Amino acid sequence: MVEVTDGKILTGKFVVCSVSLFRWEAGMNELVQRSDAELLQAWLDNVRSRATIEHIGALNRQFHEQARIERELVAHVGGLDRLRELLTHADPEVVLSVEQALRRSDACAADGRGRSAVPPGSADAGILDDHPIFWPARHPPPPAMEVSEIAQRLIAALPLEAAALLRQLRPAIGLWPQTARAHAPIDGSRLGGMPCAPPDWRWPVAATEPMLFLGQINCADLRGLPGAEALPSQGLLSCFGDHDTVMGCLLTGQGGALYHWPETENLMPAEPPLEMLTVFPRAELTFRPMWDLPDPESRIIEAILPDRPRRDIYKRFRDDLHRYGFPAELDYPCNRSKLLGWPDLLQGESFEFTLDQPFDQYRLLMQLDGYTNGSEIAGWGPGGFLYYFLSKQDLAGRRFETAELAIQFT
Image (cartoon, rainbow, N blue to C red; front, side):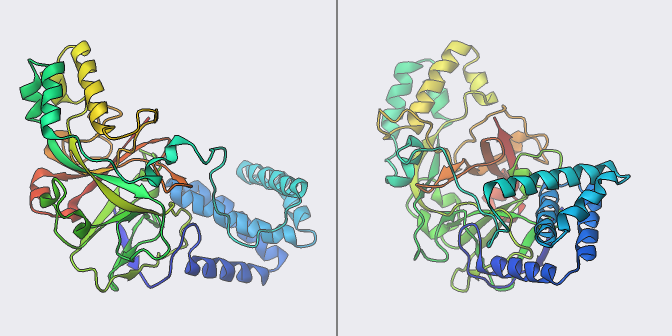
């Protein structure tokens, strides 16, 4: 499903990268040189071609291009009148698009806004600066609960099943997003922003769209953490996801791509083959040692704790395990991004749409929750988790290129 395209070099930053801005300006200059008739024909061609596109990310790009053409046409004297003439067009899709374009033009006029000088960005609104969602990004990660304390609490809460539960205990490494740093190393661990890559690397593409960059992990940063021995001691893990997979479009999603580059000395900023319409907020990563247990709704736990009341006791303990070290007054879900451990399940073990093999054949490599960098917020689809799974054999053999990207949403 994944195609690749040659990559070049750019210097990236959040929302708009320098080369993307150059391409946007070049595209606008090209449109300025077109006549009214040429712009109108380009707009019509764009509207008609949308009927053949199923991939939502590719469709978004068509709308993005339509908006560029539309802004230029409306800026011309008589441009709006040319659009209005299409209200009698035989194609109802064209008529609907004209009506939408006219409403957009009226809204811009009412707001006193003309053509944008820069491409549209995004900002989070309506969340106060002291909201608890920002707490993790503004504080260092808490320590892990000691195994001895885990055992004591489980024995006290579920004495008959404690031994069976403790056999499922796994080390994990929590991903702890922090505020972005202007001078962070290019190969540093982070979520969002723009990636670095080897000079000859080609950006992964799905349905003609560049995959979205999710983050990168410098394996050297993991040394000494529980479970790190299952991962390389050096190199960069770099994660990408098809737009429709990341945004929860199950029927059109095409998965993701994961790379491990053993050497980091020659990595450089990577350029996508097309302007990125979505760039997630950059957050540097530090790491939290963790111990993890299976999700209460997993088959393993259902077999150990078949009755719901005892599973509820277990669920409360597991929540306490994940929130260990958090302030008691912080009544807000903690970030669940992690390497290794067990997946947190939102829809049970149902991954039929996204995994090639039965769920029990896999091990979790990485789980990505929504995150903040202390001021901006990023999330996936309607809210949920992204998971990179590897077969047990491929994880043992460190064949990261075989990783499969799966999704669950609320």
